[in-house]
Image 1 (tube, rainbow, N blue to C red):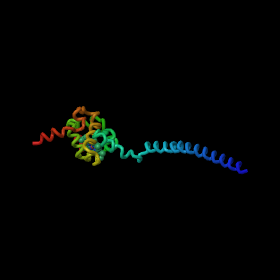
Image 2 (cartoon, helix red, strand yellow):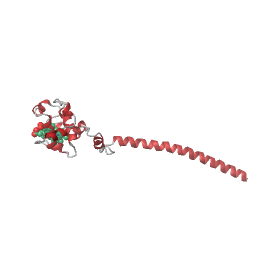
Image 3 (spheres, rainbow, N blue to C red):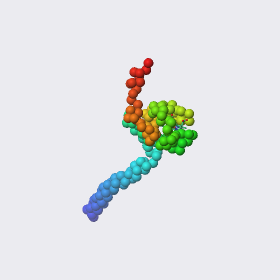
Image 4 (cartoon, helix red, strand yellow):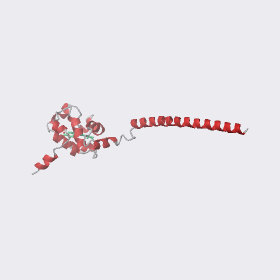
Length: 164
Ligand code: HEC
């Protein structure tokens, strides 16, 4: 009687142990499975870190600003359709007289504002490198941007030496 009880007790314990072992393994799989969709949703949604990503990446790259991204986020609002007389991106006629001013002047007007063109496209968070990249992206279809101009402005040493 006693030994029977002990035996069945041990059997029950063994069954319990093996069940809990299997359950632990299953739990890990289940946890991994539950985590996966969260990661995917995060990547696809807008407020899961993507808002801060461009700022982080542009500072990490040391000024390798994303001209196309900035254009589509900020400048395209006016420059896609020509709002308020804005020259349309890629429209040669709209840009003909402007490109004659030269890249430096266009960049200066984009940074500091020019008539209906708000300074920095109305976004003070854009630094000079960002504006440079955005203007290069904007005028590339309508003018030859020289390598010197398309590289980030790195002539600050020269201009310091040039000041009279
Ligand atoms: C609120 C509308 C608006 C936004 C946003 C905007 N622009 Fe403009 N932009 C204008 C208008 C209007 C003009 C034409 C100004 C004029 O010639 O009187 C213009 C002109 C320009 C010119 C030509 C300047 C010249 O000397 O002819 C450049 C370059 C330019 N914008 C770059 C940009 C860039 C780069 C951005 C984004 C960072 C941007 N713009 C965002 C409205 C806008």
